[in-house]
Amino acid sequence: MTFPIENPALQRALVARGYTEPTSVQLAVLEHDAEDRDLLVSAQTGSGKTVAYGLAFASTILGAEERFPPAGAPLVLVIAPTRELAIQVHGELTWLYAQAGGRVVSCVGGMDAREEARALNAGAHIVVGTPGRLQDHINRKRLNLAAIQVVVLDEADEMLDLGFKDELEFILNAAPTSRRTLLFSATIAKDIAALARQYQQDALRIDTVARNQPHADIEYRAVRISGHEIELGLVNLLRFYEARGTLVFCATREAVRRLQGSLLERGFDAVALSGELSQNERNNALQSLRDGRARVCIATDVAARGLDLPDLDLVIHADLPTNKATLLHRSGRTGRAGRKGMCILLVPNSKRRRAEMLLTSANINAAWADPPTAEDIRALDQERLLSDPSLTEAPLPEDIALAQQLLARQSSESIATALIRLYRARLPSPEEISVQYQPPAAAIRPARTGERVAHERAPRENVPFEKREDGAAMTWFRASVGRKNNADPKWLIPLICRMGGITKAEIGVIRIFDKETKFEITQAAAERFQAATHAAANADMVIEASSPPGAGPARDLGPRPGKAKPARPARPERPANAKPNEQERRRKNKILKPR
Image (cartoon, rainbow, N blue to C red):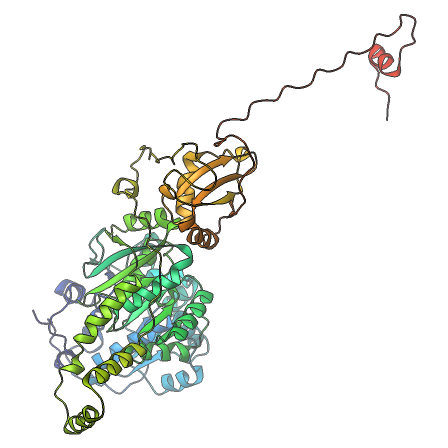
């Protein structure tokens, strides 16, 4: 199916760009019913929205003409929530309208406002910008909206989430009321619907998002990991998949800085993307990904919307998203425009339940697995070396001559060994990582409403302090909760397993006292357990290494029996003729003596 457009300049631009078949949203906005009308569109990320609305307003600003008249006051205003999305939209509309002689100007926060003012003064057909910078240009009389025929709100839900409601209302009120208003959003929430009612007239509602369906071109995986091994797990994932482009999401700017520095030290070509960087730094980071100089980008949620990186095959959530919308928008950076992609969530033991609820709310069926081990990666490296294209490419004459000289001086085994060393030298070393315990399927299934989840108890046999009956050496730990905190093995054991990334079988004796609980962990798991509980710091319960408790019953789980109070000594009898003391006089007269 071809694009149903009549303008030859736009047809040539689409063909030159390799667009042969329209996406669902592009086809919907080009229907006869949508022509010259306000549009309220919900479309999935990566569905080609920018080209869709670029084609949708062509009939309004070009009509039957093949080329624009000389540029003057802008005819179209496109508003985007982030700098990166605005710059991307500017690039898309530039090539789309290039053969029609269209002049597109961007007005983006963080860029030189004086240079933008000169570009606006020279004339433009289309202006693309962020709300704050556009409002500033309007206030300074640099941007004249008198000739505006179309206003586009791209990612309108994100603009409201970022607090741009006042700026949007200012801009929309400044534009002519006779304009077309095209509103594009991933979801049509109440605030978006209210904005549409206020600023659109007889808008056509177009919904191309499949309700409660995740992106079909993205494969989701959830990786179990100890809290203290998040970084090690990320390294192994990057080494295992060797994606052409990877986007790693963190929750904070500090985490972005730390993770980028760690990956650079290990030999990865990594760049950072966060709100604290200047616009030039952010542009350079994105360009490094696009041209292949960098293969990993560590980013905050500033990169969760609007970025279109053609070779982005993998998205990793180093920190879990806060909600379903963030999960879908982060993940939507891959699997765009018909390409396949993979999304991986790194799930610490203490946040497994939260991850399950998040995936369920997004209707995502993720495959759970452990992170790849160093052995897995080394085995894969061998396969990649044996199938490296450089071994099968036709050699150049000068290469053959050099190879013959090498064979004359060295044996074939020595040359092959040197090749292996060179191949390994360019690869970051994989990390040794602990394999996580996988609970049975019944344990990881979310509980239904009203259903109680039974937890298996630890063995209760009376075992010595140093070794169990199976001969496993044990190490003692203490938790800062006891009887006064209603400590009970029913909830203590699952909590210890989650925080420490261990199984119930690795727990030995448990003793609950008034203010603390002491328990045993197998020595084989003790170091891993201590590191995991330290990383998963819990303000309500501190776990630390401890000495064995003193002598006493092997398991002190029941309530402490009450102690008999000593009998009060008998009060000596007073003589019958003794004078009453002060207390007796006050009691008799019922008068309290003032202090």
